[in-house]
Amino acid sequence: MSAELQPNDEQVKARAKRLLDMTVADLDPAVVHRLQRARLTALEAKPGRQLWMLFAGGAAVALAVALTLTLWTKQPQPPSEHHAAQVVEDMDLVLSTENVELADDLEFYHWLADVDTTG
Amino acid sequence: MITLDPQGDVEYWRRTVTLDQAKALDRFLAAIERRAFRMAHIATGDVDDAMDLVQDSMLTLVKRYGMRGESEWGPLFHRILQNRIRDWYRRTKVRNRWRQWFGPGQEEDDQGDPIQSVADQTQLPSDEQVALKQATVALEQALRALPLRQQQAFLLRAWEELDVAQTARAMGCSEGSVKTHYFRAVQTLRKVLGDHQT
Image (cartoon, rainbow over all chains, first blue to last red; front, top):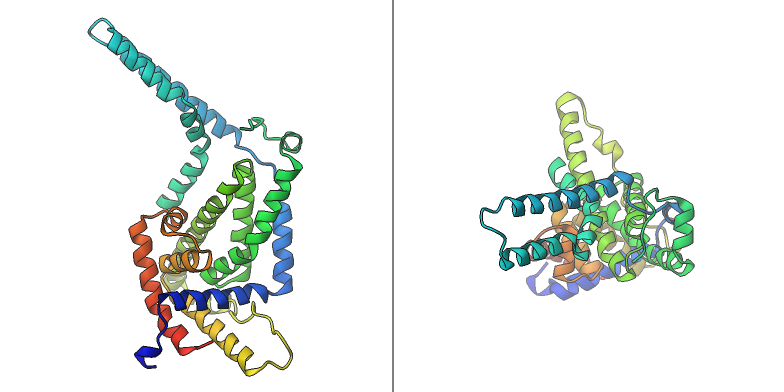
């Protein structure tokens, strides 16, 4: 094969896409049927976090609150306005919506971490 | 944002999730399931394993992220599927290593036939159809021969048309890694596709 007949990057991409699309269009009907069944099974599944995840998320938030309060009460100086503002800021960070949403994702990240370490 | 019942019971799900949302999930999965299967099949070389990976990914998406916005489903599904494929790959590698140590391997028997999934278009294929089929088989063999990360990067970039950032998120790696894997994959596939002009 001469070098000038080699396709460029976009041609490689386009040809591969065309061929791969063809294999999808020509999928074995038995496979297509199994995929449809798999989809229906998935759609019938009950969504939601498992109970332990709710517990873990709640425990993480509670621990963070307890840690913040502990550090605050152990301050050697009397709490100034600045310290109070810091605590408010810390509490805000701990209890913010973003963090609650982060707790929602805990299971996903836990799973990802598990995948990374079990390899 | 919809709050979940801690028990996650079916009745609650049925009451909370609208029919539109269920239909949207169905449409999303229907649109992506065949390509997802082909990706998993190319990675595993086995119809049943590929089916398991896709079904598991669908279940995970619906159960954990079904109530997320529709625009999030694509990136989440790709990430779940690619992680499942990577996990499968690692487990298979370990299993094959044990087989090599303790007995004759059965990998040859376990491999699915790549041609099986490509059905005949007509009873008497034209020259062009024969050439297309040959090119398809050659491409599939070349894709399977690629290191998994190159294979994933190429399929997500070239086939799913994800951009570099989306591909990086789906693969759980840096954008630089995606560029490297994709570049190397293209270099390898260029020769194969050049030899099979279609």
